[in-house]
Amino acid sequence: MKKTTTLRIIRWVILLSILVLTTVMGRLHQIMKLYPPIDAFCPFGGLESLWAFLRYQVLLKRIAWSSFILLFTTIGTAVLFRRSFCGNICPLGFLQELFGLGGKRIFKKRFNLPAKIDQVLRYLKYVILILFLALAWKTMSLVIQPYDPWVAYHHIGSDELFTKYLIGTLVLFGSLLLGIFVDRPFCRYLCPMGAFLGFISKIGLTRIKRNEESCIDCGICDQSCPMALKISDRDETKSIECISCSECINTCPVPDTLYYSTPKKIEKKIPVALLLLGTIFIFVAVLGITSVTKKFVWKTDTGLEKRVERLLWGPHKIEKDNQMVDIVQIYQIHPTYLAQQFNFESDDDFYKTLEEMEIDVDDVEEMINYLYTEAGRDPTQLLGGGGSCGGEDH
Image (cartoon, rainbow, N blue to C red; front, side):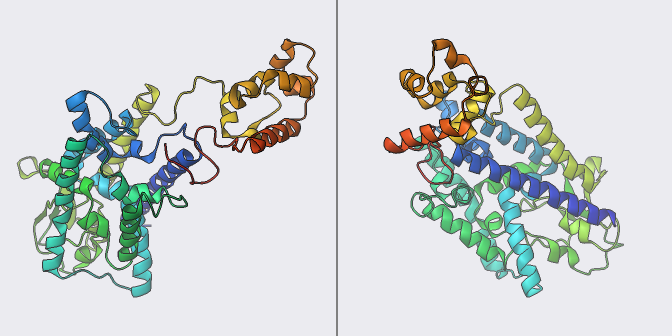
C-alpha cells in the first residue's frame, strides 16, 4: 500500500472516530443531563462566550470551560498548520465528505458553481461570523444555537428538530444534500468557525508548495481539492480557504511535486504525516491534560458512588450490590413504604445490599416503575433525559 494511501486512510479513521465520539456525547446528553450539551464541545461557542467572559467574567448558559479549551487549542493548531482543524478534525466537515463520496460514486464527478457565484458566496461565512459575534456581544447569549446545523444534527429524533432548531435543520439537510454534488458546501459558504480560522491562518506556518519542474499539469490536485482551490497553476498555495486536508498532495501522481513547507525565510518541507498527526497530538495532549485536571468536563461530577449514580439512568440499572438507601436517595421513595413492602426489621436493613437481603432486583424495579407510572412520571427522566432525544433540552 502506498504511503499516501495509508495517510488518507488514517485521516478518515481519525475523522470517523471523532464523528462517532461527538455523536455519542450528543446522544448521551439527550438521555442523561449529567453529560454536557454539544455546545460545550464547540469552539465557536467558546468564541461567542468570550465576549461575556471579557465583559462580565461569566460563561454563557450551556457553555463550559471545555469550549474555551477547544477554542484556544484550535487557534493554536491554526497558527501552526492553518485550517487543519477543518480538514482533519471537524466532524461536520467529515459528514459532508461522506455524502460527497456517495455523490462521486453516483455521478463519477464533482460539480462546482460558476466561478463568479462561488467567489461571492464564499464571503457569506465572513458576514455570518461578524453578525453572530456582534449579536453575541449585544445579547450575551449563544445566538448561533438555533441556526447551527451541528446542534440540529444532535437533535435528530427530537420534537425540537423542526421547531426550535428548524433553521439549523434546514441548513444541515441542505448542506448534506448539496454535498452530494458540491464538496463541503457548508464549509465553503456558511461556516463562521471556518471564517474565523481563515483569518488566523494568515499567520499560519505551513503552505502548499508546487515543484514546477516535476509537475505534469494533470490537474488531479485541482479535482481532489474539497474547497475547489486552483493549485496546479501556482507555485505556492496559502489561501485562507485551504483546510489542510492534504488531499491534493496525497493524490498527486508525481512524488514530491506538491508538499507542505514553512515560509520562504526558513523554507523547510513538512511531511503530511507530521501535519496530520501533529494536529491530532496537540488536541489529544491538551484534552488529556485538561481532563485529568478536571478542567475539560466530559460528565458532571455528582459526588455519588458509582453504584448509586448509575440508578439515575433508571430502575433497570438496579443490581444486587445496591442498597435500599440508594433507592431512597435516587427515587425519593419514602423509607416507611419500602420497609413495609420488604418487611424490614430495623433501619440497618436499608444499608444491606439487595443480595444480602435476598430481595429480587426485578421486584424492586417493578415497584419503582409502578409508583412512577401512578404519579405520571418517568423514572428514566430524573434529570430531564430519557431513552430518546425527546423532551426539553435543559
